[in-house]
Length: 250
Image 1 (cartoon, rainbow, N blue to C red):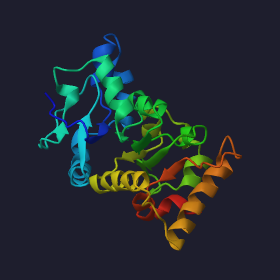
Image 2 (image 1 turned 90 degrees about the horizontal axis):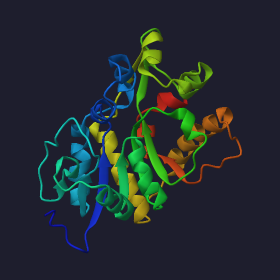
Image 3 (image 1 turned 90 degrees about the vertical axis):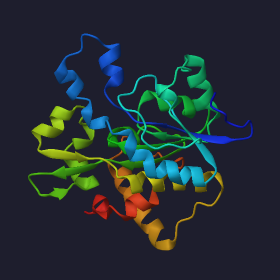
């Protein structure tokens, strides 16, 4: 049905939305649903990444048992499995355990790829707190926090000093006057490129890039729950960090 050659390589993508929580938990309140909105994003934000992945020789398979939207980009190499009639628990496990890497939200679904020792590309992450306590193979980009009070994007120092990294609900951000800005298509595309380069041993940073990344990780270690963690298995997308230098402002 999917017509994927036996020798083909594929990437599993996933965007978090409210479909799962609203259909699986019938008695959940609107406020409870809204309080998880800050972790969501639209599947169309993968469009540029999908095109690039196809050019790099991958098939792209969208996973997830329940989704609000259909994909609006079409190719024989792009499969909206989450909206197919062939979904099953076994197939979910197979696709995620055999993929080249996972690219998507920080939903629990992606952990299947982690168990299988695959790289996990996390986009639209809101969890700076978890960054300190988990160490597995991943490349990550973050949603941006814009302060309406300060009229600026918040740096890592400002996020940690004000305990914003511990915020777990949308209402907490709203009360503090913080807008949460999703990653754009270009950022997600470059996250995919980084993952492909890592798998093909082509990932490099020049001297200036390394300085920027070292500043980022020094801040994380300063505020981290586990300062001895060397974070060897975790990377931040180079494109994302170079284009969001406010994060490492003092």
